[in-house]
Length: 408
Ligand code: SF4
Ligand code: SF4
Image (cartoon, rainbow, N blue to C red):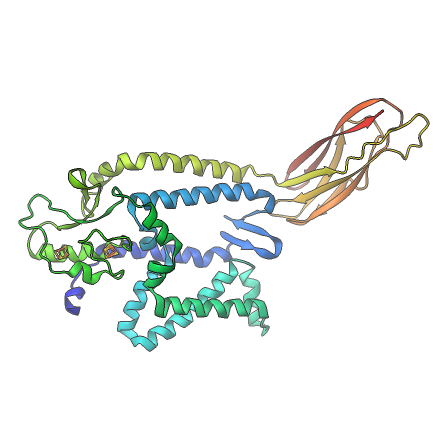
């Protein structure tokens, strides 16, 4: 039985492994090069090397909508393709099976513990600077909070890798359940499909079900746990090749007479043509959402300015100059780097406005408040509109706030 599986040429698996390992490498590297990570101490999010602050939640929301849309659209079209080609859990589901055979159960579990420990450290690095944490450990310090987190996650990952394995995907993963809800008859699925030239349909050898690490029998309609890995296709190719017929098991889209089979070898252009009508709308929407996200990311504010406590005061005839309007000008540096910000008041008569400070140095994410006093030097009755403006010396970031001072 083992030798039968050993003869299968897992061609599709090679491409899939390349995809899984690329994603895994990105996930490992990402928090250390600030490709993507949350920085809880400063309440910011690193994205492609740049920083988003709480004020930029709308940009993050737009990016999240885009990513969720792409995942759902891909799932609707191709099933659990994310599980089979992207998610590291599924990669380790497969690897641990082969480690069991190669190193025995104890060796496989030990390997799982080591990888889990490393994985837990990487996950912790998504929430604060991993390099600083590593430096702490290397200098002999053991920070209690991060250490408890890392040990807890090591235990969790070890359980997932060594014992739970595909149960995580079948039972616990919310995305797995989501897939069951959103898939429909037109979602790509596996079917024994009688192609021209086939003498027979299925040899009922069962190799496709045997090779499936998710416990699916692809000849049946019960395929909600199928992760589109393609191993069963390669298994069937072996059997069909020996029978000198085209592979009988295929990914198909649609059902009944309108179903079409997608062939994986030498028929790329034909597959693209068959899929094109279904791909056009999702691709257009992905481009629109992606462009909007990129635009919002590029044009997000780099500094924020708010003028608060606009106390309107009456300047009576003969009032002392000190009666006026006291305002708090609040500035936040929303950029990636520290900057010196210059403050200006525009639109008021000369000598009416006095800023506590006209420039201020702020680190990324730092907030400061500057007092602005409006002292009318003469009684000009009416509403005086004016603007408080801030300009970053190095970044050129700008923000302004329009407000009023009323003299009765
Ligand atoms: S049914 Fe086939 S494609 Fe689906 S998970 Fe099993 S082996 Fe992979
Ligand atoms: S591997 Fe192919 S021929 Fe064998 S049982 Fe599965 S579908 Fe039928």
